[in-house]
Length: 215
Image (cartoon, rainbow, N blue to C red; front, side, top):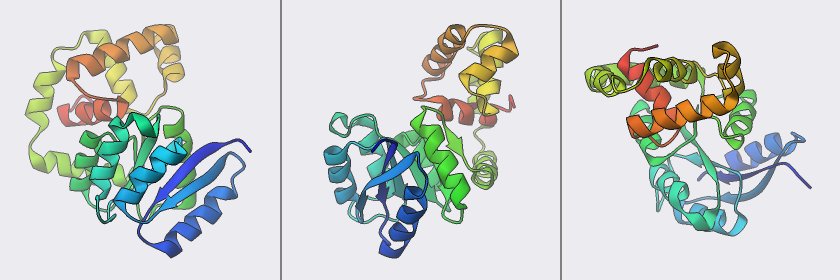
């Protein structure tokens, strides 16, 4: 049986059961394991090596931030990517730094959950629209715009163009078509952007773009 392998990390058994039923109904996704606390989540990720872990902030033992950080650097867990569930903008900021690839609110619908899983499994970032609004409001209130704007100054004009398109949610193919360049060139520019901004992935780069006011 093939498909995107998902690990559910949530302290609520009934919610895990509901999520499992929704996800297993999709032909391209299958839930390979469940964890009800943070230590169990890391252990299951190492044993099952899923493609995607759905990590709830409210895990006990190790909280969702700690689990996300461990999975992002734990070679025993393979190339698992984390989708972080929360309602707090501060937690989203912390989870970006911890290495999360996607964010959903606990109230997100099942279509958003499926889209998020498919996106992060392909190496893309996913931020639910309502989560994005909360996230950006919080960044503005933190007064981080000036710092981010200064960091973005090190980019070339072309790298800034690519950064803006990444922040708009375009994938490499779409960026290449918009800029009339090859996907290899896009990957080269994105690699430079990540290196210069000292961020881990596209999602963190997108956050920088919004903080700097370039989008």
